[in-house]
Image 1 (cartoon, helix red, strand yellow):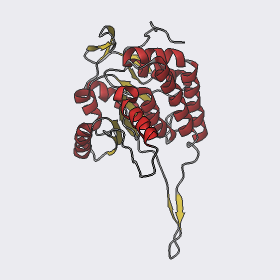
Image 2: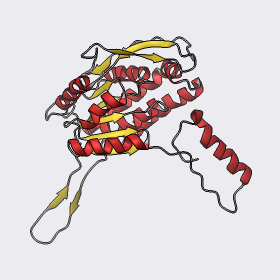
Image 3: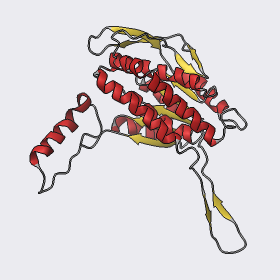
Image 4: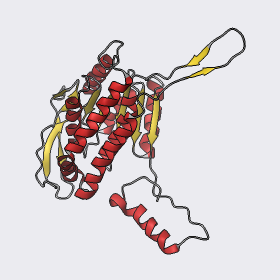
Length: 295
C-alpha cells in the first residue's frame, strides 16, 4: 500500500558501504514535483567526492579483495539477495519514488518489481560468461577470456531511475566489476535506499557506490576519471556527445549510451488503424511522455 509520508532514512553519499557527507559539506534540495515542496536536503557531490568513491571502487576491484575472491555463483547469490530485499521493501520504495518522481504509485510499484526481475536476469549470467578456444595452424593453443573491465560509472535519468539502476548495475555486478553511480538530481532518495539494501544483502565495501549531484559537476567527474574503465549514460543525445568526447580525452574509456528517442511506430498497409492509434497514443504519453522506447 502507498505511504504518503514515507520515512526518508538516507540523504548522504553511499561510499564504501557507509553513508558519508560531501567533502565540502554542501547539500541541495529534493523537491516534490507535484507540490514544489521540499522533501529533504541531500549531500551534493563534486569531483572530490567522485574521487573518494572511485578510490573505494578501485580498492574493491584489486586481486584477492573480498569481491574479486567470490566465485561467480556467490555473486549470483548476492544479486538475488538484493532482488529479494527490493521486493520485500517494494511498497516503501515505490512510495519514495512516487514522492520524488511524481509518477502514480502503481507505476512506481511496477518499476520496483521490474528492477528486481532485471537483477535476477543478470544474476543468472554470473556463471555463464566464458571465452572460446580457437583452432589455429601449427603447434599452438589459442583461447580468449572475458574479464571484468574494472571500475564502471553509471549516470542515471529521473524518468525510470530504479529500472535503469538495475539495468546498469546488473551486467556490471554479474561480470565482477565495481560501480560508481550518479543518480539524477531529481530522484536520488530511492537510489540511496536501494544502496543501503546492497549492504544488507552482503556486497563487500566499495563494490557499490552512489553519489548525489548534478551532471556538469559530479557526472562530468565520472566521465573524465582516469580510473573508470567504462561509463553508462542514459539521457539526451547532446549530453551523450559530451560524454563520448570526455571519455576519449581521459583514458579512451568504453561508453554505453542510451540517448533520446520518441516512440517510433511502423505502420503498414494491412494495419488495424484504430489499434495503431491506440498504441501510438500510449507510446507518446506513457510516463508523462518521458519514455524513450518504441511504441
